[in-house]
Length: 229
Image 1 (cartoon, helix red, strand yellow):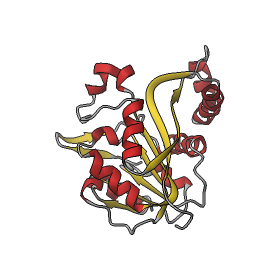
Image 2 (cartoon, one colour):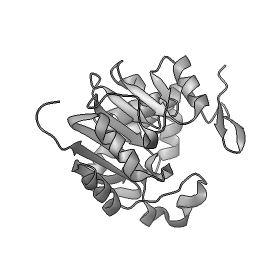
Image 3 (cartoon, rainbow, N blue to C red):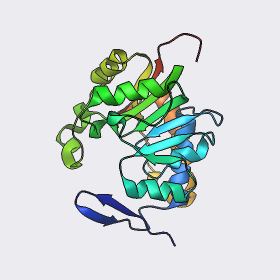
Image 4 (spheres, rainbow, N blue to C red):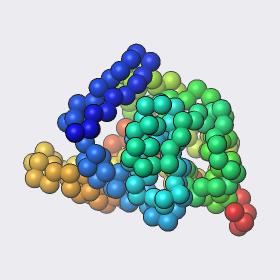
């Protein structure tokens, strides 16, 4: 049995085993890796990696960072290459090292956005890509601040601006697709953890059709540079 405790400023927060199951999380992140077309041979940096789940589906050279010492320790016990680091203060990686920088629900927690983006740009190879996922303040409105650690909201236009300002060319920006299905609860119960794979396959189709719940923005951008890495 695995017990995971998250350390935040207010102290120790135990995770209920029903809220965090490694096998369930793995299936979710397997779907993420497919949805964002992350290839197994790509060297990825997960900024704000939490428990490192996306790293399971990337190259063994892939890395993660987090500012929470406890989750970094958990990642190391799980065999992931994760370090304690704050991107706004510098990352312990060489220039142009990574093929992909993955940043899921992190940028809204960062006050110094320019410093964060500068480091992400520095460690990314020319023509490498950054994947940003963040709540959409225009949809979430005041619910955005239900998470006390949210400090900076974004719109699609703001995301486009920070990417352009930091040397990225936007490839795609959209919203997490809405899963419209009347038997969602029943399907989830029948499929168990496989439901999440099914969910994201349906979402890919719905996303292409333009159905988006607009609660969360995702952007994929390419680092502007020459052909040489």
